[in-house]
Image (cartoon, rainbow, N blue to C red):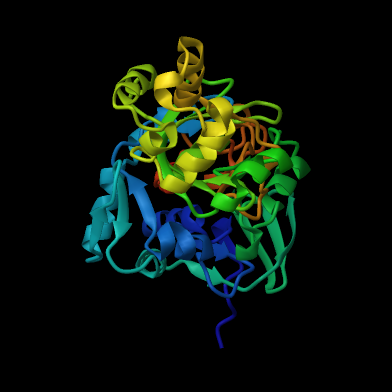
Amino acid sequence: MTKPETHFDAIIIGAGAAGLFCAARAGQRGRRVALIDHAEKLGEKIRISGGGRCNFTNLHTTAANFLSRNPHFCRSALARYTPQDFIGLVRRHGIGFHEKTLGQLFCDESSQQIIDMLIDECRDGNVRMIHPAVVNTVSRDDRFRVATSAGEFVASNVVIATGGLSIPATGATGFGYEIAKQFDVPVTPLRAGLVPLALDAPELERYGMLSGVAFDTTARSEATDVAFNEAALLTHKGLSGPAVLQISSYWKAGETVQLDLLPGVDAADWLSDARSRNISFAKALAEKVPTRLADAWANAHAPERGAKALPQWTRAELDSVAAQLNAWSLKPSGTLGYKKAEVTLGGVDTKALSQQTMMARSVPGLHFIGEVVDVTGWLGGYNFQWAWASGAACADAL
């Protein structure tokens, strides 16, 4: 009986999007690769993404769609492995897909197709898949030694692809950050990103009963010029929906968020027109937003709690309400945390990594890819494209 191989060119820890893709690409380049994961079922975050259809990339991906202390770091990898490259792979596997909105590509059928594709690619690269296996220690002398519940494995390269802290129900842990710290590779501060925002009691008293009401908006945060034109959703805890998830990555504690209830419309002009039609403010607003929201918002912001007829409003009242309509200001009390977050902001400091190879400058052979790195994309397939691009950059350098 042949003894299982324990010596490899590269050991990749974490079989999510970045890890699976990196392993497959390196294996197909002729590298001896072991892929280790603690889960029984691989790619759980892939499986649940995009409502089960996996928003696997975005046609409009650029470095401007990512947050990082060094916004230029991701440029090299993104330029060398593009959305069109991944689309080509998806097509070769016969997976049907469609563009939903804003360049977001989804599988026609199931996200499991992407997982199966990546596993098939790993098999084509003769990648040894070791799971479920818990990694106990990673040490380094002349080479790296990875001690696991399935035995010890040795390699000249170790790739950390263990993701971030978001969605712990999928098995997410802080393992990658711990390994970075063990080898004195700096990690920037971490926080939840693409996450619903909580409102405090007074705001919930006004709007909490509107849970489930969605509306189109332009969302902004106090400290950035970035704006997102998408849907927002009121919940029993606060705010969610694509526009809010997007702006949450820029929002910081203590700041306000502004929601434009009339995106693309000058509220002052619109109010003047509504005033000439001699209808109530709530009735006019209900032509633009859901009736329940219009009634609650009029009660909270319009003169005399919405009871005053529009023709009787003063110029000062018109100007005040118009300003609030185009910039409804809310001060979140916090986020709903990693449990509800789609990504982790922050991570392994890009200053410590080579943008060409994703290797730690101070630790030859130690690489970091995917979400564990301080590169975080917008909602809409960008984080998957970073997984593919950073995985490709690393695989091609191994």
